[in-house]
Image (tube, rainbow, N blue to C red; front, top):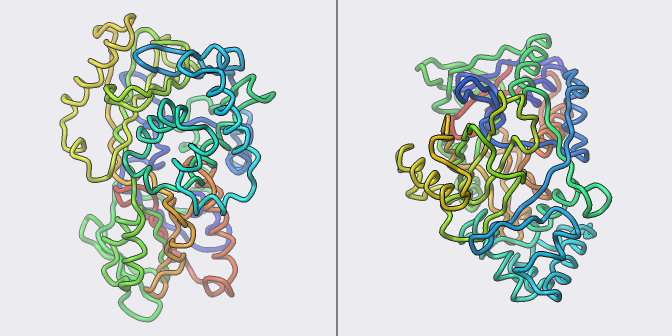
Length: 446
């Protein structure tokens, strides 16, 4: 959506296709009972300068709310607060030396500027060097496996650097306070206003229409086959879906492009949204190191957002990160719900099954590109082997984590390149954009 807006502002006529019934992709909202909120959990940091700028442009920056939150750990079936220095010192799963080394690791990572050098070091090796074997096994490895599965074994230290850098940016006054923000009414409000701004800039948004294929059929003509069987032609195309989807949509890609795309591994996610009568705890995020728990964290959005927003109830996310080909994707909603609810009953004595008002699941197979060794050196180019077809997607985030601020920044960088005819496209040429996720949404312009 950001790229479509920038292209329209460059004088191009843009049509945005979205396979889902609403705009927004991974930032879209949905309904839980009578509550409308984000399909996946999102927060805004005070350091998210690109997102702040976009919200200001959309007229929404004054609708940001800020709150101080708390962080928890679930270790050996016990909850521990991990929200400030005192909590850190009281954290009994680690001894004093281990705590010192863990703190030194976080501090050291927050001071590193040359992230590129970390791409040549395996994340587990770097963490063991700084934190020691005990902290690695008790804390880091469970968290790495929760997010990356066994792919952590080939992930570079740049991943943990980016993760710590973003976490550290949420802290105010060192390690004393963790401050997160959100737009009132959530991303439903953001997408609603964004759609209005796109309309004002003559961007035509067509939802509920996916893409089957993208082919070059002649000089400066790219033909796009849509899910309703129709075909439309554009001068240029930019694909922003995940790389496996790009490869499937574009059979004319060269073997080199196909090879580069196939080398990028993805983690997927099964993310449950639960509307509860009562909250579980007062932690915004609870990190889980126990392997018996079927989800990888507990995100209690109502510990950040005023519960009045949810009618006095609590909104909780239970994410499960897993490989894109994991068999869990084949489980029914009922099977996943039973596993997740059973685990909540074991974890939280206060939780009663009758307190569950609504349970919805979102499944995304290609969510998080794995930052393997020398990741940035092996990425597909923005210009593909098909004349007039370009690539801009989350795999090109090389020095940050996957979040809305980073994707907005990526779109802004791409728009600058598309505006320069010497770099990417001829002056006045239109651009065609395929927008995020494995549902194959698409945007274009003539």
